Length: 223
Ligand code: GAR
Image (tube, rainbow, N blue to C red; front, side, top):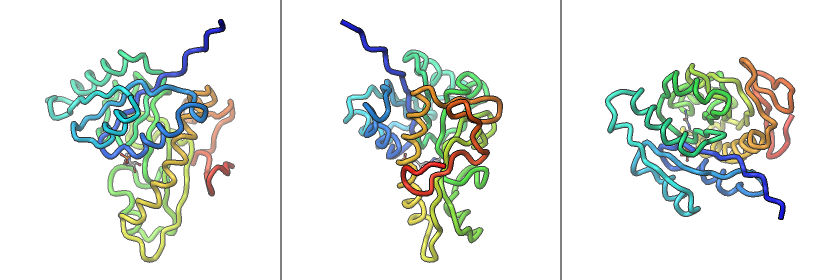
């Protein structure tokens, strides 16, 4: 009997609702040929933990409030991630700043999704900032994580229009719909071995991606 090659192992870090985690779970199997081997939350009450349990995925809570220093919290995260021999670490609404040591350890296999068209609006309250600036377009970016916050090379972006009647919540909802499209695509590329971090740029199929990342203007049309 021919044994199947083991699937790449993915660890997902969350802090809250976990709707991006859900999008990944929904695409596991043929769409994303990988196993999510553990979901780690820094908050014991994160709803995403139930999403993982419903999919029979191992969960672990490492509560940042139990640690006096960021480095000690990050060391506990590292111990858990390394137990699972993770090939890829996916930040999916993980709302803690990671230490440089953590980021360097996993650099090149650490992805994040951020709700803005990076480099615009790193940090928090991105939807309100886009509204305050009267931007006509807003969106979301998947990027490789580097020590500088929300600054790593972009992999893929999706844009949404900002409508006259939008508030931060309606805009966030429109952006999130795109998140569920682009994050699974980026994770799929990575676990298929097509996506790499090379210096300060992302490569797809050995080709340097544009600084904005690939740009998704309608579902599944990439250019
Ligand atoms: C998502 O909108 C994600 O882009 C954002 O948190 C939300 C998590 O939602 N991430 C960041 O702001 C990271 N800087 P989810 O828990 O339902 O996936």
